[in-house]
Length: 337
Image 1 (tube, rainbow, N blue to C red):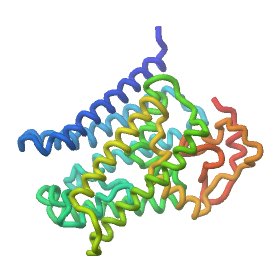
Image 2: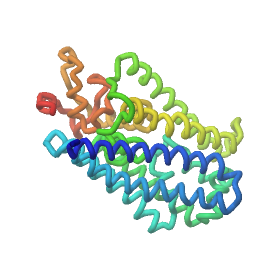
Image 3: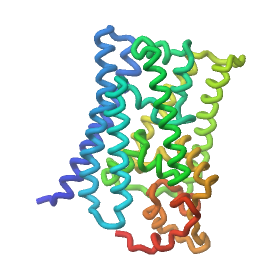
Image 4: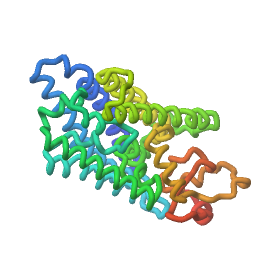
């Protein structure tokens, strides 16, 4: 008979498959079909999309966090993972349940990622943008103001937390786009085949990609800032919104899920523009790991000791542990279970 951990791992994998399939189907209906559907059908699709994103996603995070802890055990080496999972549960409850109920707005998760990851807050400042036109009849002026204040509060929390605790504050505690899956579903990833080690060639590709995606994100951000300041610029406001939507659906949402299925949980994190910005903030604030690079044998123990776990590219790319510069010799030398 299979032991409990084997059964729990199968359940975890099944839930991740369900999460991915439902997300693709519902997102496809919401972004592709709803605008062409009858008003009643469009309203139902939109409602179900937000119900799925808020309630079902939070339920999965809570259940799968407990499953993951049971599978990996509660040894000292998993203490950071436990803290990360608790952080994601609290973040999900606040972002997806409590705040939407208080503000009567089920779409606040649009505003949980600071600039330049998404320009949704900037689009909401323009009365001519497609996003503003679609949301104003639903939210009203007060609702729009509340959403923007919520975004500003989240951005401040992320910035201050990064200065105090490093990039792990967002990437391993708060990120409800990709970071949560890398921790909550970690034992189940990849869904197909065995976990692959990121080789040097792939690292070089990701290193280039992260700057390309940062440049794209910054371009969209500055485009909207210039537009809002009445500066004469090229481009159609509706077209810009659509392009960014397609970018999100293809190179971010679908690619993140592809990595979960066939690669590693933090595949998208290698080129996440927000992660790149927060990594720079961590370095500016003096947070980095100091190791003897000449003795590095690529054993991977740094990644296991790092609070962001598999987020680093390799030993030489790793950063942050505490507010001050420290060594991680004691953590590296711990036996890896």
